[in-house]
Length: 455
Picture 1 (tube, rainbow, N blue to C red):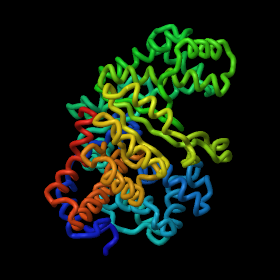
Picture 2: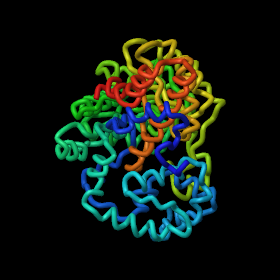
Picture 3: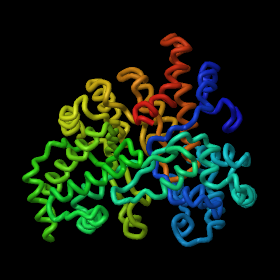
Picture 4: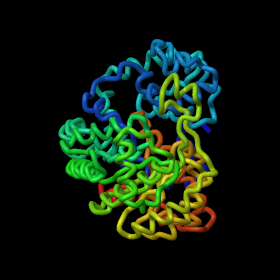
């Protein structure tokens, strides 16, 4: 089979037939980490490294595994030299999805079919640089080429969202919708928390010396985002909270930390549990989607955290986390009044989430296999389990969760191919008719995200 050919990830003729029905559908990417300012500026990318690897933690991690010095990953080396270092080791990462994603990006969007390696690195760099200099390769034009219909960025409650306005005016429609991500307001244990709360109060001209003041500021931000077309919030937690924390206790913790004291672990849990419930309450009142990303244990490698900082590729999963007890309480509190999408980083938690989604009915959805699970192996395993425990028809569909613009296309393509293959095998096994499989492929790839996120 040719590398990334027509049958890529499609094991049967049936799978190929299903894929044809969804291959060219527009992309609705309900969760990513787009650089909206960059998209609004709409300037040509400076070089291939900037577009393909400068913001991609997946690339960083596999290069480190092949002993590429950090100078050529996040350091100060010239971008061309970084690219050539990547090319030197790139054949050695084959089998990892990064190998496929980079080549999909080159092939699909830059029309470069060469295979990246030590002998082709400079050739591809020159080709890519020439292509990226074209007007048709600016961010907004690339997003159109990818087929993006609508995408949802991830944004802090303090953000002013003016770059969203610029892009949406340019497109004449709500092309990029914001997503409300209030983690910084909730993470009272962070050394930067108090400074952040002051910033939030200043942003909305509100006094935040009390817990009620914070809630007012969060509510004002929530209203502002709603006015900009926001339809969802996003929350990153190691384990979920019950959302039933006591306000009086949380208020005492808030006052204590605002006075300069360091919160204990118990203090943090009290405050965060209460705020978690308040954030969900705000979402339920507006009919927003509450996206819950669970299980990422952050910054486990001290060297990376000290020398580069957070979000540098040092996050891992932990199968030992107990997500069920608080999640059960939370979903019961908001049963049938809040749309919830559940994502987990740890594959071992997929069974718990699938059975919880099944138990709680039509307003609790499974999100796509997230982060280190968004591979052909991880997506296939999740889809197979969904089909036997929950319902395909209620699956929230694929999200790129990416900081890299081209990933919004390549990751959705990979997902659609895996989905077609899984559905094709069910058809070939006599478990569903072909027309039903095609309808499910349409729902999962396109209709469900539009419906769930009210796009």
